[in-house]
Image (cartoon, rainbow, N blue to C red):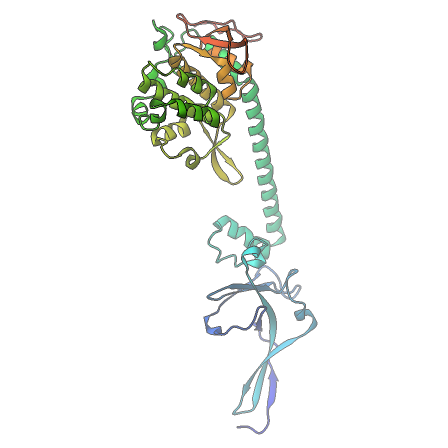
Length: 413
């Protein structure tokens, strides 16, 4: 061994040594730590300090540090660091420049702060586009950063515009949609189907053939209603009173259940259960399959509701099924058609209006579009004496109403 030591400075080396300190303690097994160094190659070191990000990953935690930005250590600007390698035999020490990095652990609460809090290449939850954008934010040129900022502003503007258009369309459908139903029904006397109204036969010789039961509830769906409608079919006085007290069913459903004795209980029970499910669907804004599929709810009925009575929308970063104004009108029309079969083709529109939380004007317009004759009837109950209800009656031939003001009837070709 040499009796004295001398040192030799190698400051001209392109790659400086890295001094790493972990903020939350010492690493017990350094060989298990994986280090990755990211450098900004777009910068020119003679003019500006080269930007670097050092990422480390252990079995338990991930760490990150950088030599720029607000989270970088001030030690690099106040002190110079060196690393010496001593050859004990010759007594010669080679000295190199070093750069100090203080590694911060990446905690769950800090993962969304910014790029400095995570390894942009190792985060598999990000899309390729997001990873590229993150690298541009950290290492991109000024031109690239301006382009990224412009693209994000355009994206935000497009989302705001889409939301505004969706809201405006929803309001138009909400307040003018039923008028369009009337316009469509009046526009052609030979119309047999509609996007909003149930399929109908205007040349039918009987009321039951105008809106056919099989078009409202298919044979497969009808068969699936046997099990869920059993409580209606085996109704007792006690269970009926419990339904009234719990207010779990609509007013028109309760009214028909009270008169179920002596009728075709099985058929009416199935129809009433389906009617009650449609009324509940009408009162929803967002429809989730797992919430709709309560125990005993047939999957065939759930699939039909999601496909035919909801629209797919994109909100808050996720796809959802919602009942728009148009779909609401469609549900109301199907409820009225089914209620006509249940109530001997004379339905209490006032009860339906209350069950589905509609305005009187809206349900009357839909009933008129369906060709029903609107009458009034004085109703007596324990809650109200002599209350006037609007009734919808299906007669042959269908009732044709004059076009509302400003709507001209289309000429037949």
